[in-house]
Image (cartoon, rainbow, N blue to C red; front, side, top):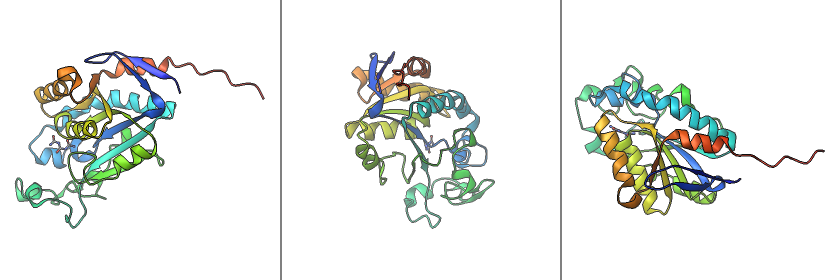
Length: 232
Ligand code: TIU
């Protein structure tokens, strides 16, 4: 596959698509719909919806290019044995992790609220990483999967910008992966944290990675011309 080049901050990038993956962080009903973990934390979950449309387009383009697509979900085993007590004990007991909400038990694997929203639902051959923490590398086999496929660059999208996206990017950066965060494909309950989360990644010459809008990346992907196949 050819390289794609596009505008990004702090500097334009050229990426070898054979070595790139799209990593979609925690686009789960528990974060985006009423009655889940995000709302239990006191947030207006509708603020995350803006990322869905652009992310849908990026997901379609990545699939068309045959790029590796990985989805993550934050959540815990039904017995909560992998949930740190200090994480579980936060907030009102009726809305804590494991409590029963309108979409099933909050942030528990296998419950409707834990699953990925229908608009971005994984295909059967796309790995889904179930993670107990904010970062996608902590206590998961994500790094092994990426190394096995020779991936060195991650396009990172999802929610929330300053929590699970930022934590994952920092983990990836320390492991030697280049991260490109697609700004309009991420979302936060707090607009100011979204802006600060992106600013922290690209500051100081790209201390954790790069930030790009989805449009230039999509345009660059769409401009790829493959050599015509020989007839017969
Ligand atoms: N609360 C918040 O902003 N985020 C999380 O708890 N998890 C993720 O970001 N996925």
